[in-house]
Image (cartoon, rainbow, N blue to C red; front, top):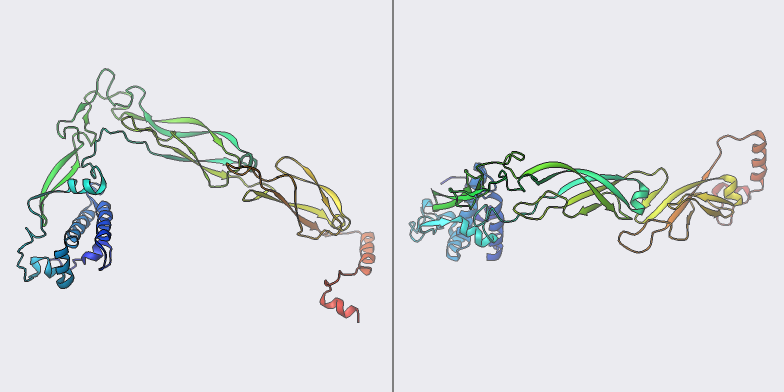
Length: 381
């Protein structure tokens, strides 16, 4: 017996005190992860699959589990020289005769696993596709229509998706009788195990095409670039996804097409910034406008509008425009607001005359109550 044999609880990823349901759930997850049908020609996955089956065979049996908890591997494996002498284990781990893992996974996963019990000719949904679209700030705020190009996998127009040339049709594979899988028996520490693998003759389709379609070479599918018109809803934000139903890859055997998922990328605006459904904009004004007050033009998504700047407006002061000047709420009613942040521009160069006027102004300057600085207090003394 290998020295690196792992603890059964560790194999399934559960604690020693785990309940029967927790053990069963962990086994299903682990067995599904390492099943040979999902990991073809992967020796490591196959070994872990057998390991988790061995662990579950012991931990799912109350008597074996009790012996394992008390004696470890020696309580359940005769190769460890336990007092059981191998009796009662039915060939090592309670397997009597052949075991069909397809039946086990059929009960676990509903309708078979890795081809077991699966009908290869049943309708299958096509895969989803993903692409991206770039929008301006205004397009995202107000909504728009866009035409995009995607490469789709579609049913061949020549054969209608059958893969067979006109006037012919696929026949049932004689090797697997249309099941798409064949049974393979092999002897293992658990007894004679029956597993299933994809039929080599039909490639898992369950059908044989003797006269392939010349357009799709018997595949039944072709790749084609298609233009699709999509509606972008008003208020969509950056990195959100528009789902276009039925414009992914075509399905198989009459199954529905997948969806097209369009990721939205919004270009940066030269002066608008977004905060949820609100819009922010900086409005620069002069020192004189801030001091005396003024009426200025402010950009909005609907065009310029007037804003009254009251006398004595301070740098960084924010005004909110009335009338829902923000962004349309996505799939909802109303809009957000637009907020205007005031930036007071201080001139970097002035004339001599302007300097004298500013000095005269500064002489008469009296700070508002409670706003005196540290040095202003010394000026009063």
